[in-house]
Amino acid sequence: MELKVSMHDDVTVAAVEGRIDGTTARDFEEQVVAAVPEGGGPLVCDLASVSYISSAGLRAILVVAKRFKTDENFFSVCGHSGPVAEVFRISGFEKIIPMHSSRDDALAEAKG
Amino acid sequence: MLTLAEEILLLVLDDESGKFIHVPEHSFRYALSGAVLMDLAFLGKIDADPDTLFVIDSKPTNDEILDTLLKPLSESNEQRDCSYWVQYFGRDAFKIQNLALQRLCDSGILTREDKLILWMFKSRRYPIRDGFAEKEVKQRIMTLLFNEDIPDPRDIAIVGLADACRLFERIFSRPEYEKVKDRIAEIGKLELISQSLSKVVREIEFQLAQATAIGPM
Image 1 (spheres, chains in turn orange, green):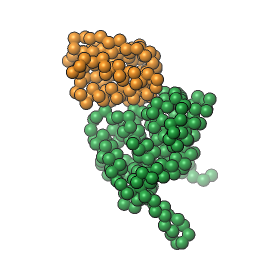
Image 2 (cartoon, chains in turn brown, green):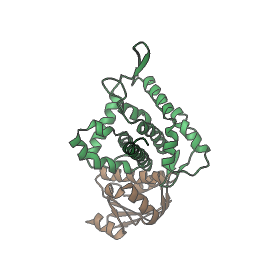
Image 3 (tube, rainbow over the protein chains, first blue to last red):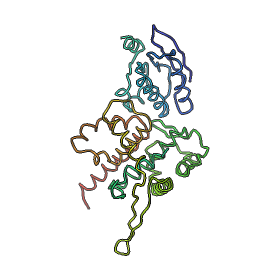
Image 4 (cartoon, chains in turn red, yellow):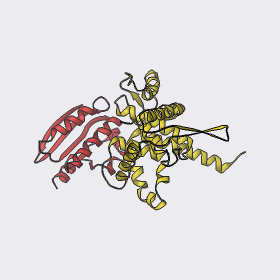
């Protein structure tokens, strides 16, 4: 699992590559939280290049989303497709966490 | 911290009498096996996807309850999903229950009382000696159900376990339950093991209902 961080105005985009599972979930949590500048700010987590997500990966995303919500910072997931999108769908994540099909849509909401 | 098996046991004990409230036996068995599987997942020992539950760290936890399931999981070469393992370990639920009850007694949360009824039948109850742990769990779950916070993984597990045992239908009045039932379902779905537990229990309830409707041949 690798994370590429970029800034789009004041929004941090964390583009994840690889698998988010029991062996990488802890790294994912730590790296996503560390990606945001000190003092906080909105974050978009782009999963377009994630090939697999397990139960541990779902938990990691929930933990990060909860942390951002508690700190009153915007958090959104975008770009997920194929089997990863299917796991999100059957777990009903879209009812709990803002999710967008594209990075542009997520950025528009984060900036709005 | 209590294990999930201990937490679900506290939730099914009646505060006043110390007796288990009536919960369908199959639901309770699978809730206990699901509880241990979720604890193993939270410890990073196992992981799951919709098709398979797999071991990622077979090193024993040195917790008798957890290792009772981790060992056979580690030794299995079978690729099975969460539903299979929830049912498989549901057969050993009595052992999980006894170990968890003993631990709650050892830690001073419960005390055990045996009484003889009609000088023959032994009735066992577990009055709550220290109700803090139980009240804390109940309070946390109630708050979660009536707001829109993102639940943490442990609370998702407890909601899923309690729902599998249909505890919320006992705790809430009918109008209250109607208000929170969608939220309960929404939370339970977030964890794949919890989702499988719910599926297993509902399938059995469906089969039982069908058998009752058809009646004896």
